[in-house]
Image (cartoon, rainbow, N blue to C red; front, side):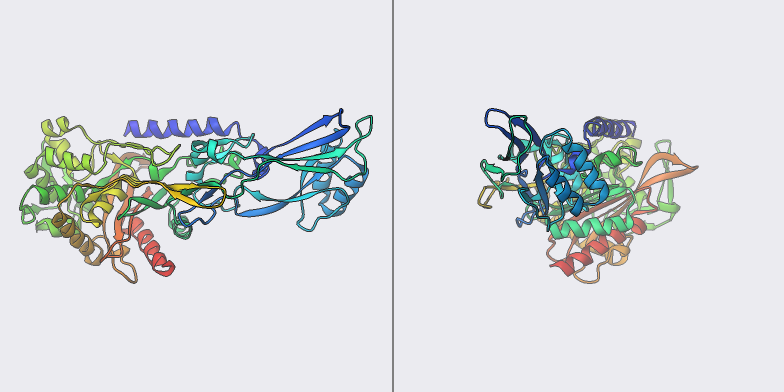
Length: 532
């Protein structure tokens, strides 16, 4: 737990240090720089404008950046130009532009779309980010010089960097004063369509962000496609605006941290891994344990949620009712090695880049030696507690393996590269690894459907299509205002019969997985049905 807290604080400190270099110049994202020069040999005044950065697309080549345009004028330092600005801009905007023109050099000014004035060229340019920018934690943001400072903007800065510039030259007199004559406009190479394409689905990302903001103050959602391992949506809250990075520096809640890629206490969603290990080991589905709601084992006291007694239970009912006592006994029956080996195969305790600049936390997979030697550690591990930490992305991957018949895939975020003609060249997918027998995966799918239909996950039941899932309420050891803080989880697949999406939801400081996180899953699933 201490390691988890330190990692998050270190990540936040890193983003704060980076963001300190971000200035108000970020507001000119599409034309990220405008340099002014006096070319006395040619008796001209110049202003140079960077062309837009490369586009970041979704998997269907819908734009995630460079979606909107605005009008930018190259304004010479003349009395006529000042008069034109005063007639078209607000008094404050006109005064600010006039102050910049007082240096005697042309400047770039954002103007109304219908702005027109003699000898003042106007360009329709892309705004890098929208006011409600999607996938901000993934895309990242730029520094004051228009270079990538975080996320994909930094990871693919060499590809996304502007491909050229526009130079506007105004005639000047011998003293360097601008003349009332037409300017000359020079273009270098223009590459309006090139960039990168992500595996995200824009409409699904918008849906997930909208639903998450409705329920979650601090937490995350990760949505995968089980058949490919492609990340279709990823949400982290609280969020930030890449147009106003400096505003978030003083915000509470560490808004720059991508919580979908951050490690958390796992809780009962990990029971899926333990149940899978039991089914893989042998005919343990009929293994039975008695639950009084609380038990003492290895000098430790363990309890089910609210110390609820479940009586004599086997695997199906234990998953449906999320019985901790059963899984403690099951873990002792199986032993440490099969559970640890399967957890490792499913990606727990491991990390790999999902795209340049995007490296998820590895989390913590409890050392197998500790699990072998300390019965209480294995007891905790068997229902997802103790040292175990995992990211929402890792949990979504575990569910995806179950939903896809036992196949495990590394999650991916990069769909491919887009050339100057707008043509996508996709990256080559990796072959999946078989981590579960198909029969095991099918049985777990059936049980997870029962969890949603009649068990602890009833609040996740969508209006149509059905779903399977598992709740989790993970103890953190934190105390706030005299009460214990828990992380509320729900992880599942949708729809039930032929799952197309694996969805993991975490809500920090939630009441329980069933009451806090499951409704988020339901509303996302219902939204998917409306979308597709």
